[in-house]
Length: 339
Image (cartoon, rainbow, N blue to C red):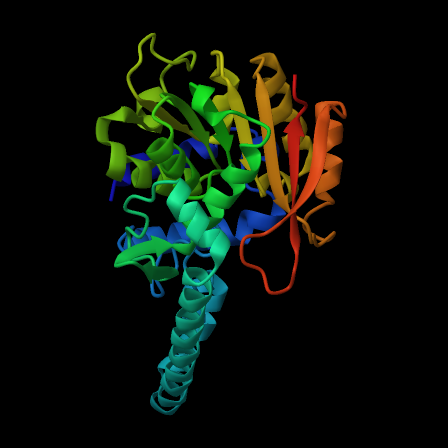
């Protein structure tokens, strides 16, 4: 647990324009809870059932709802410590555990018997995808795979019809979850050497630590960049992963081949999106890909097709089926036009 990094991110976030660089209403409640759980539990098994750190932006599952509560909810939940109530609640947790176990068993069966999944496993490498206690997984041919990573592979496979990932050297991702997409890309495309990974606090803390777990000193976190006047890549072919909070985009000064965002733009205030896009345009990023879920709640998010207006209508729009989805929902892909 890198307390120095987490505390620096939290303290510096208070000094910036929060309307641009802090989580919007959709994430505000979730992020406060994540901070509490990080300080309480650290990163151990954050992709599991009992952490409470990774709900919503990782592939963890909710087992005990008390882990999802903020201060007022935690105070009220002390009611469950009374002996009789505690006994009843423990019984409910046992039932919930059975349901989750059955869900995970069924999930495993669905994934390992899906032909698209099998084809993706033949086509791409999946290395150490279940670290930090991942429970959403399946076993195929004596190898364990994260279902989340298969979904990342499905997205990249679709985007590969538009972009040649084997020719990309530098990559910029806003809203990278916990770093799984970057980990998958680096596992499969050794040509990608330079990466900027930007996410809101505290998600960027989790992503920084997750990527450092795999790539060690190749990862530069906020402690490495906070005093810098500009952020740019080293002039070499060494792997470099620069993990920064949102306000650091103002320092970005480097050529980037590909920009990517998955889902998070539609969860931001429009003011924040306009600001991010202005810096994307300023740095003259060559290719752009944006992926989002199709069903949006107008109370907290907006129609993902409207993202195109921030890019002056210059993106192609395509709807694609998800890898595994019994409800037949689709995801939207907005991509820069082919040359």
